[in-house]
Length: 122
Image (cartoon, rainbow, N blue to C red; front, side, top):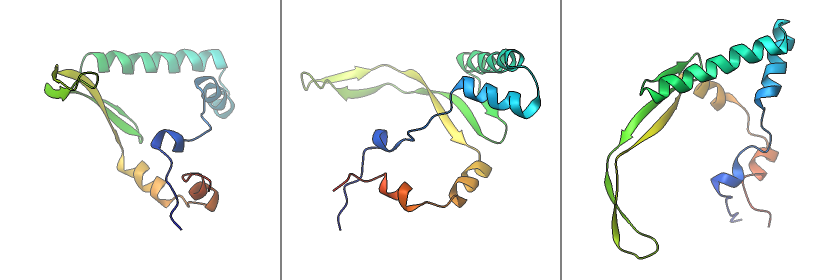
């Protein structure tokens, strides 16, 4: 039984929690007003962006660390012409999960439904 694995893009979760939904969740949990939570969360996200754009790493409690890193220049191939081309050095972001979150994810049970969703239907 050789099943063909879906591409990574096709395997990503179908459901996403939006910023607005997360604000509503926090409001329900804390009793604060949505507008106050939105103000705080938007400010928090803006500070993360500001730090990243100043080439500083940002650690988010119990979740991850985001580290801006320079990727070195390298030789690549121009896909249109097949000729060698040169890619300049550029900034990128490395996203590293905290070990506690990784361990919690590993403990999650994979259901048959989860497993079936990573393969193409035959």
